Image (spheres, rainbow, N blue to C red):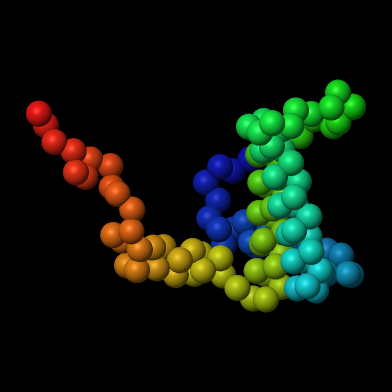
Length: 115
């Protein structure tokens, strides 16, 4: 497993996987439904580990990491199906946070005095 994949490499890997099937990508609306489903599964796992709802003994053991991976896969499917480069999307959102929201949060060490 290559731990140093770029977002483009991951999107290409997903595309290579999906492209081997006649059905191809689901429609954008179906992919949004899948995203909702996967987000629900992630929420359930987080609730089991950090919330007030422990798992039943009969429930399958899954991890938050696995559920995040499932969510990421579907996001990449949606992006690929719409020809969206997630690296570009990431760069746009980071620019937004670094400009519009640059003074929104208290930075670590800000406002502390050395008394």
